[in-house]
Length: 191
Image 1 (cartoon, rainbow, N blue to C red):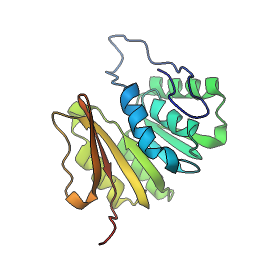
Image 2 (image 1 turned 135 degrees about the vertical axis):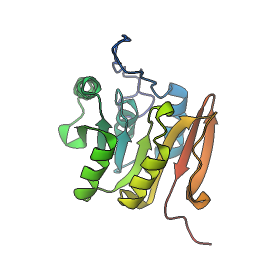
Image 3 (image 1 turned 60 degrees about the horizontal axis):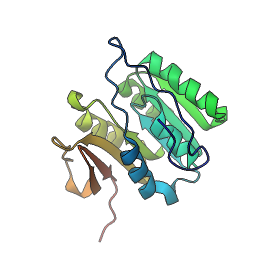
């Protein structure tokens, strides 16, 4: 996997070797990553970014490469947490620019809320088959983890997309092959 744009553009980051004992990793494709970051590009300078279900850290590293001030990576699998650390170290990312929380996403979101963390962007790419979308949306909204103008970005399967409880939250939906990316904001502008 390689970084598409910004400071670390063209750098290759490691992925977990495919083995039977490794969880099914479905990394964000380069096409999806490039498209999403083309949309966000002018808004990334100095932001706080949460990479939920981080895997190899490719999405969060892309955000750092394009100017995010701080990225918090949340990943449940310790092997991937170590891989994220290794990728960040290889790129020379300053330690103060990131945090890795190796924990279940629900525990991590609660921990972040207790600390008073608020994010400009939250990117969630959960395992498609687990059906975590509604819970993620409800937790992020109820815990107040998103800045008023911030976006929750959900990567989901095109064949079974998430339908938000309130249609006003949906800012935009983009389709890339078998993947759909939804952009949600919980404080839509009033007409």
